[in-house]
Length: 356
Image (cartoon, rainbow, N blue to C red; front, side, top):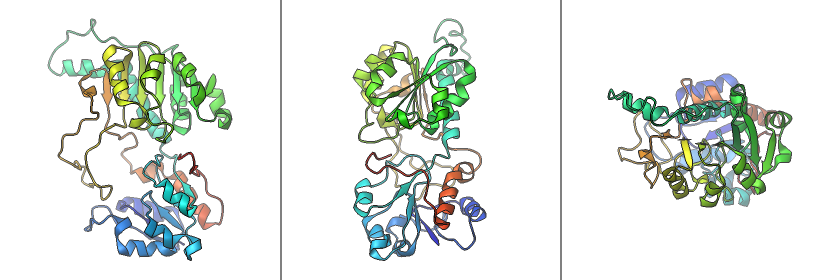
C-alpha cells in the first residue's frame, strides 16, 4: 500500500506516521524546508507516484493526478484524506468528475475549542483594551470604561454544532451557561449533543437561534450556503451587546456587516481567528523556521476592525500547539489509513454535494 502527500510535511510528522502504521506501507512525501519549491501536485516525480497510490493526502488534487490514479484508469486510489477540518481548498467539481471518496479530520476539535474559549473570555472581559493601557502605565480605565460581561446565566449559541461546537459546550458547561445549537440537519445530532444543548435549531430557523443567543460561537465550514451567512439582516436579528467568536471560516461572516455592527455597538466584543484577508503566499512550501511567509503588511479585513480594542484577533492559528499538529490531531487520520489498509470503510466522509 502507498500513501502520497501532495504537500510537504515535517520530519517529526513523518516519524510519527511511521510509528503508527505498518512498516510495509510506503510513504511518499517531501520534508518541509528541503530544497525544491515546485508544488508537489506539479512535480512530475510526485505525479508519477500517485498512479498506484491507495491514499492521497491533501486537497491539492489535479485533473492530471486523478485521471491516472482512479481505478477506472487502472490506478488504485481508494481515498483522498484532508488531514484537517476545512475542505474549502478542494476542487469539488474535479472530485465529482472522478467520483472520488474524500475524508477530512476532526482531530483538532478540542484544540480549536480551547482557542475559542480563550477568545471568548478575552473578549467578554475586554482584556485587550486594559492590557494596552497598562503597558504604558495608564490605569484610567480601571473602573470607568470597557467593563466585563459575566458569563453565568448567558445563552451560548453554537453555530455549526458539530465536533468543535460540542467540545466548546463541554468546556463551557461549568460556567453555568445555557446552550443552544444550530446546524443544517438537527436530526443527525448525537445523544451527547442533544444532552448538552437545550435546543438544536436547523439553519432554516437561524433567526430564532440568533434572537436567543447572548454569545455566538461560529464554527461553520465555508460552503456556497454558508458564505456570508451572518450578514446585515442577521446582525439586526441578534441581541444588542452580543459577543461573537469565530473559529470557523472568515467569509461565513459578511465583512462590512460585522464592521458596522462593531461600530454601532451592536456587538459588545468579538474574538476572531479565521480572517478575511491573508498575506499573499503560495500554498506550499510553508516556512519551517517560524518566520513570516510574507513581509507585506496585511490587515485581517478591508475594514479597520483591527482598530477596535474590543476585538481579539488571532492569525488563524487555533490548532497550532507545542507538540506537532500531527501528533496532537491525527488520531482519526491514522484510523482512516488503517481502515483502508484493512479493507474497511473510512470514517469522516465528506459530503461532496454539500461540500463539507
